[in-house]
Amino acid sequence: MFIFLTIATFILLLIVASIRPVHSELSLFELERRVAIGDRSAKRVLTRESLLSDVASLQRVMVALLLIIVVLLGMVAFGWLIGVFVALFVALEYGAIARLGFIKSWSQKLYKRAEAVILRFIQKAPVVFRVIRSVTIEDDVIGRRLGSSAELRHLVNESDDVLTPDEKNLIVYGLSFSDKLVNTVMTSRDMISSINKSEFLGPLTLNDLHKVGHSRLPVIDNDIDHVVGILYLNGLLALDIKRSVTAEKAMEPKVYYIHENQTLSHALAAFLRTHHHLFIVVNQSRETVGLLTLQDVIEALIGHKIVDEFDTHDDLRAVALRK
Image (cartoon, rainbow, N blue to C red; front, side, top):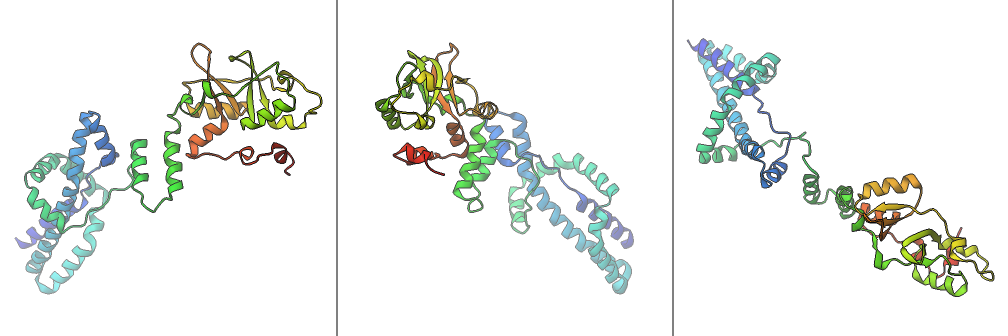
């Protein structure tokens, strides 16, 4: 009878040891986020996930108790001498045997049938499982996929010293980059500096343009809704100031437009495709509402201002002479 009990207990030990509850691929943070927005299925999964750590704790306790019982029964059934070898065999090999495919498959089927009962039992005995948790080691579930960009932001914010402040900013701004629209970073219509196409680029005009502090200016035909070209100020440094020319003669006639509701990722792709550095931002009525530069987009991507080399010099000619 003791031999039969030893074998039966050993089989039960293998079944319990081979059980591996399947966790949701989503983390607790992501499940909580979905519950907060009213996802009922996420609420059920979250309740289950919150109890699986207790299932694991119960499993460890059961394995320890069954291992002790098998050893004691083996001593009684086979005697002290043989019982010692039986105990060593069980202690050293039960884990390897429990990992055999057919045992794992059978155990998982049994567990799936019994899981609802086990979870209800855990919910009804919180004090017992509080004690069990205090004497067992909780495993972290790894390998879960990220459920949303919000979760990655949370992980970045909780990373402590793993990431530097600059690295955190780069990741956070990068995550929100594709969601931002052109109209959130553009220079608004009332802030645009421009020059009329018929204006002569004499010494006084060049001096005024230099004071504006921009390296590119839209050239307009009477008003900002009619942009006819782009004036590159660094290209004006080679002009003979004794022979004034109009802005229309010196401008680049190609003008690129982008809609204010386009995303910044779309804008970046457009900048790279056109090899252009400045877009005129328009609305549904094709009216000019702003101005977007490649620098604006990159600053939104990396999360801080870029100091243009023209911003750091009082004399643009000094910039032109740099090698």
